[in-house]
Length: 239
Image: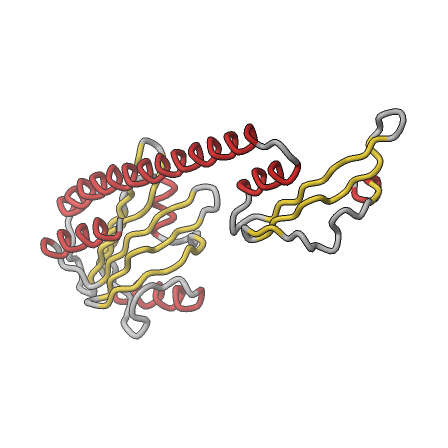
């Protein structure tokens, strides 16, 4: 994905004036924009996910699904630069005035916005509507490529999950003792999970009353000496 984004940057900057350039990826659920690629002149950087400013051009693109082309006067650029500096939403070289010519194009799949592609210049009145159409075509190509990368990644993840489940199922089916059963269950644990196995003891009327912690895994490791192992506790106290 990184090489693909850089390739798009190279293609566009060979055709159009570009003092500032970014590609952002939009998360609809969190309404955050991540910036995996930013170029300010020759300087490359990136930014972690951040909220979309309500009055920004990126917000307009996300809401409308249409590109935004802005040619600003010196006074408009000054006011916008001051606002962006105050709320910390400015990208690139903070010592420069804000770019005077700005193009923001959606990376769109159906009605979904995957991100924004923006090319900008410190010069006045640089871009035309024909330039917007050109960038829209490149953005569409990039959208398809990003979707393919995500689909491939998802497919790999699902395959790995199915392989893991098959391994666990095989281990459980072959377990012939309690230690072997606990060892098989340990396959559920990884370095991002904490898992505890309890045995439950019923009362005479088959109502669960007590529980015993018989195994505990954390950070992918079994903790057989855990201080709570095999110590009964009342379930009603942990409801």
